Length: 254
Image 1 (cartoon, rainbow, N blue to C red):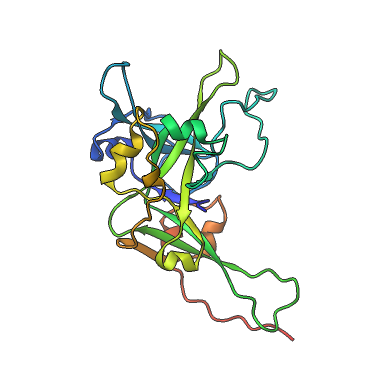
Image 2 (cartoon, one colour):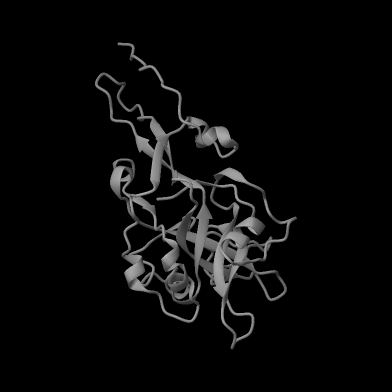
C-alpha cells in the first residue's frame, strides 16, 4: 500500500528533466509537500496527442489523488459522491479485470513522481502489555539513492455535468514488496525505471502485462525510520523525512 508520500520538485523543473511539457499553471501548483495525502493534488506524467495523427508527447498534469471512475454520480454540490473506499491504490494483478480500472489500464496510464513514500510497521505485541492495547506503528521513509522515484499509475476523467470542468484523478499501482521493505509491509508502489516509461505511457498501445509483473529493483532504494510527525496530515516539512531519534524502551506498569 502507498498512503502517503513526499514530492518537492517544481513541475516546470520536472518537465525539463524528463523532456515533457508542463501543463500545470504556476498558480495551481500546491507547492512542495513532504506529506502528500489522499485527495491532495499531485503532479503526474502522461503521454497524449495534440492532434490525432501526431506523435504523443509527455505532459506534466495536476490530478487529484484517489481515482474517480467516470460513472461516479455527482452530489448536490457537483462533487463526486464516494460509493466506497477511496481508490488511492490499485493492485497490479487486478487492473486489467477490475471494472474500476480496466478502461484506464488500456489507454490512461501515467507515472506519479515522488521523492519517496512512507510505510508503517506494526510493533510486535510485548509481553505484559495491557490486553486490547494497540501496538504502536513505526513510520519509515523509503526513497531513491539520490534520484526520484516514478510509480506506475492510472488516471481518469470525471465530469459532474456537461458544463462543469473535468476532474482528473489518479491511483498508484502497487505490487509485492521487495527486500527489507517486505519486513514492513507486503505491498509497495510499482516503481518503473526510465527505460520502461515510454512503453507504459504509450496511449496507443494496450497495457504491457509484463510491466505489471515487473519487480522493482532493491538497488538504489534507501529505507529509514522517521518520527511519528508524519502520522498527522497537518504536518509538513523536511523534518518529516529526517532519521528518527532513538527512543528509550517504555516499561509497562504492572
